[in-house]
Image 1 (cartoon, helix red, strand yellow):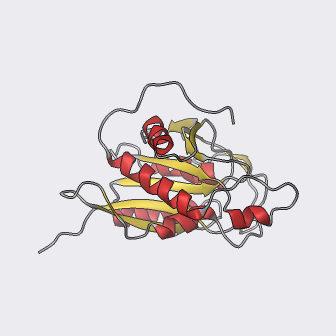
Image 2 (cartoon, rainbow, N blue to C red; image 1 turned 60 degrees about the vertical axis):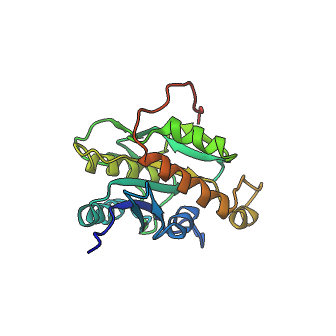
Length: 223
């Protein structure tokens, strides 16, 4: 009798801000069902779409963390204006929404978690992931801020929910897709084709499953 392989949970957001597509969900859904890890210890990707709604996104995430008991979690989000795969280092305990979410809420200067710590650091090997992506010819960098909108909200809530558990977890921001950038108001922002984004996140997920300490080297961006 074959046992069910453990789950690598990859989340993405529904479209927001009047858009019809979100690269984070396009990438996550493309990876649904893929097998990662060593042949003797396979891990299966489970994609999860999160609502672009404060608090509700964390409720949906928490439900799936409990039911799936994943061995690793990678949350994805859209970052218009960024030109590379941005592997986030830190999540902060604040919501400060520049635009309303999909339910019309726009929290300003509120905590993600009442009485939670000021910040959490990603438990992914962030610099190893960036190095691996660059070695594959993919644009990538360590980012020092996930913002204060829903991406940071989910990033912080994810790490808070996994406190005390040895489950590698973190957040990666993705550029726009070319079809989004072509319709963007004003100057055309940077973009990256879906196939390259999927390749990047599959590579990042595989590296997240590898044992070993993160690389100790200087790196990162100012934004």
